[in-house]
Image (tube, rainbow, N blue to C red):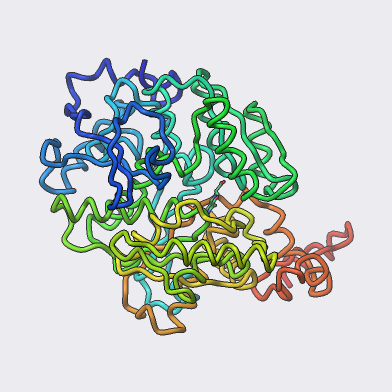
Length: 485
Ligand code: F0G
């Protein structure tokens, strides 16, 4: 059994084997990211941390035995084979670059069919010349966020290892994606842990509607994340969070589609919001592998943008000066940082609820990605996030608050002179506008007093880019006057 019996992906990929390029999958293994440990494990083991030292794991490949095209352009041949579910998927059409599962095991619902859009209006706002800013709309995925890229890979791996139950902790989008894959696949029921009152309505609506068991834990995301690791261990549930290295393999393809959208030219910058730091980690790995396999010559620089109210990465990199340092990370420095954070009772607080995270689980992989790509970290306020979000919305499609941190980040980096006005910049818009309608409606409809009352605690005091509705009596003349006014 391979793909699902739904939509355009109705045919099992295994039936089409004859026509597909055979992808050798015995070249993959798991490996501890700590070079001092570097323990190796097979891909058939459901591990979410190194059993030897507890560090994060990577999925690694022996590229010398891989069937890789000599140029990225070769992937374009798959555009003509949309009746093959693996070519239809924006993740699996790059199967050769994440060859950990044979095609008959792959679970796909046609994820990753997203677009890269040139956005001159947003470029002007951010201070870039026309033609230099591109938006990668990951909100166009089936569950409305980038998570589907990772979830197709994680569900595939879950089947590969014979998992029977799945679990995740979430600020909302992971739970929506897990719920969707679990419901469509129908063979691995899932449970999701969310912080109570911490999750945007669109996302909660999805988890409830798709029928997973929703556990609202009295606490924040970090509490849920700590508990879910214990739950996964105790109940032997398959863990769907980005600690799972297979999820990040799927998320690598976001960058492949960015390159595809730029006709395989490497941009100068990839700008991405930072929460649990799965994306930035996956993007760094994608570019490192493309350089290693000779498919690109240089990586773009990655800029990770924190919300100012959830700025662990920013502080660790810019204030504490902690770096990957070729794998010799200052663990003690990180432990001290967290100890002080707890002692001061400093808790993440941002309207961008998707990234309201204190202890990003992929911190070390993100530090590695920053080193590989000569990256940097910036932070933006909730006011800057909501203003940037309104600019994105005004250009169509829209995005949720966390996603707009990327655009606000570019604007700030332009002001600081760290990005040039003629550099080519791609912002990753991680989630759809409809995920969090509250934030959007409040911004566009509230007067300053109401905004201050509701959002003053987040530092939001105005809505300079609001598109205010005009309230009129039921009177044709007044309606026409309002239309023409
Ligand atoms: N943007 C959105 C819309 C998100 O949902 C998330 C994370 C991020 C950005 C941050 O991405 O973790 O790769 O740095 N959401 C997770 C969740 C935590 O549970 O849905 P990251």
